[in-house]
Length: 434
Image (cartoon, rainbow, N blue to C red; front, side):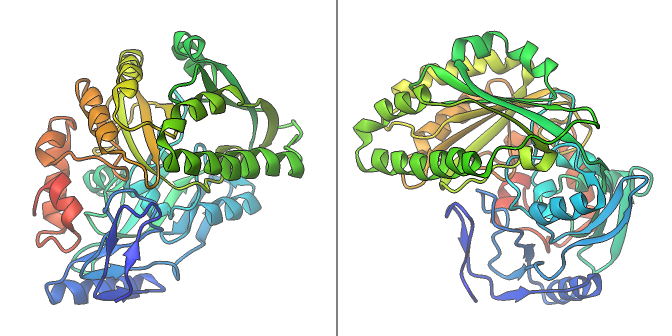
């Protein structure tokens, strides 16, 4: 009966029972017992979703004892990993095999099952989210049955479960299509925001991975361009001193201090935002891919993110820029913009369309509701789809209009979990009751 909270402190629950299975049989047994007694069950993941998607007030399942790579075919790049494995552990174990994920997001604290279930993604105009790298899934359904799905085996379940919100069953293993390890060159530098927006499509198309951060009230954006290097290239990583100064001191300690000052004295937020925008520094290096993709985030925040049609980015961003100065409370955290290729996963935010992602943030403890609601209204005009693990207020009625395969997902959900064993309050809102 230990109280559970997520990383951001935006969701909490007190489960009556916590199951800690160490193999697939134990996962199935726990689910069967919960279902037989009419209880609900939710896997906890690592708590890095900002929503209450993992909140369990009846039974929770913690998979910290079910981790690591179960098997690997290095020649084919197929790796089967246990679902409780964090992305950090997965990256290290893949590295030891000479393998890597094709694309990653910028944090690695999530479990692999949690990351794919909520649609975690990185950036890259020709690349999809982590779920697009899945070759097969093993799930334990509400009746305790263990099933496998892939493009060839139970393809409808596969299309649903790759971004399944934990609503279809507990993922026990994930088989990923990996590739040989590779190096990325990283170029990070401040550039005038107007210049970045004017060249956005070109920059997104000509770089393997492109993104930018805009500090509200500032004129500059921090632009990140990551590109693959030939196999014969040498690593040229940041020195330990520069890595520590740039990432730990500047981006965590110093930035966190500015945010705390702004929270204490809100009238300072705008000048501090301009200051932060003006002191952004440049750096160039190359390293193993996952060391470039992933950045340590030590400053706590709340976040909302929507995927929009890529062609709508400039208009939407202009509206957001015009909206921010009108807010009653100032914004201390930057806006992040990324891109992804269209995919065919039913509840993927990039389903059927090349997408741009806009993520807005606020320092923890500062007012954010007016900002998040106004942002949701702006992106709603172009059919914006909320990231399943980040904050939004949309319900099933609205989401059905934004996902062409929404009812197909509900059909599969009804087939594999007719009694709603895996639902909770959040899923009742975004999917409707079973």
